[in-house]
Image 1: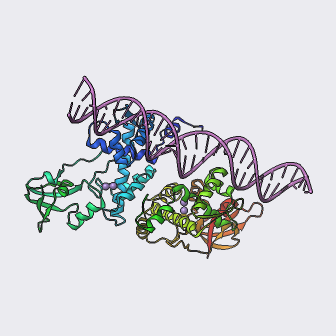
Image 2 (image 1 turned 180 degrees about the vertical axis):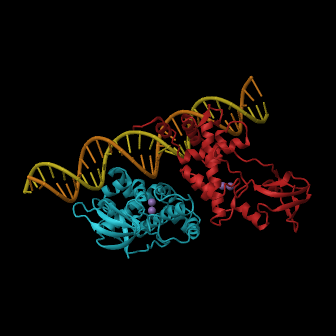
Image 3 (image 1 turned 90 degrees about the vertical axis):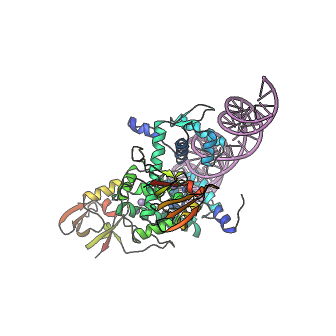
Length: 232
Length: 232
DNA sequence: AAATATTTTTAGGTTAGTCTAAAAATAAAT
DNA sequence: ATTTATTTTTAGACTAACCTAAAAATATTT
Ligand SMILES: [Mn+2]
Ligand SMILES: [Mn+2]
Ligand SMILES: [Mn+2]
Ligand SMILES: [Mn+2]
């Protein structure tokens, strides 16, 4: 194959498959929670593949300078790898906004579709989509949408389970399963809902709350742990 | 692998890859122009793959009952294969409408993006997209968008090169290359433009036309062949 | 410190989708 | 009717992405 210029050749060599993108995203997500390098096992759990497959893939990614890898010592993303991962997350979350805001999907059914849409390659498409959506900073689950440079908007948020007293507004969820999100709908615990803590029950960590100043409700510790709240 | 019910098992067996979808679409397109079964060579040209690869793939598609195939005799789509192909075309053209109408792309840059988007699987997504776009019947190139049953809207159209006298409106193009479409933009020959034939030049089949009743222009026979016109 | 358990890597194999080269069948030309 | 050209199929090989089973390294218990 012949290349007219260095840039084309460079891009060709850096060509990344959908699968490789997914691995990079998995490593990024693991690195968000842990400071240590991502372990083979952690990646294999996230990707639902065998540890052997992960070892294989890690080598390919290291070969392409997308991760730093030393045998037995786990893996970290390079600048280039991180860029691909955050861009994938950016696309995923923008498409989720599109599905909810424009196509009237509900927040519990969008994730698997965005999982496909995130791999569409055109950068112009992403820019136009971003503009069409009004440059949203958060997705329908309250997760921040990185900008084109990979910078996330931070905001102070607390797990409801750690929120001992006072009022707050639900601004995010830490679990994205359909089951959990539909249960939240049933409890009217959607994003933007205001919550007041009435009582934290010592016995099991359940929380008695007042929703939108008009309905009292007890929610389990597990639910409380998966809700992010902004104190007001 | 264990299946709880017949339907799941059925769908699993009928699982079709992106590549298989692309082959089915190629066969469909060939069959639109020719009544005879699609030849291996025709498919290999359309798919930019070797004839050997096509022979291989054809066997797999026949195994899945998506095409009828007899060695040396070419291939035709089964009902099931045709359904997959038309659905793919439906998705492709709906996404093209989305890109132009909602994201302000121009008609010459949308095809390769739609080539990726057409493989997104959710049928609910297609329904919602269709509704969001106002149930369009034609895409930005004037090609008909099949409905969910695979039925195309037909309309009478003539190649401009066959249109000897009188007035008409441009309603479609037979070539979708960026180069051709950008050239049409330069000539102001976009969809909806009215055209009057002034003269057909015997020597090389060029056509002298009047565009929107205000500009005379000579266009080559090659351009005229690739423009579809509705007489008025 | 040894024994045991866990994690990670290697070895070897599979499938989808591609290729080139060569053989077989069909079509066209003499 | 032969010969020649074209088309199609087969044979054999390659890569990406997966797998299981076994070996090697590291971590945890006793
Ligand atoms: Mn998601
Ligand atoms: Mn999300
Ligand atoms: Mn197109
Ligand atoms: Mn089109």
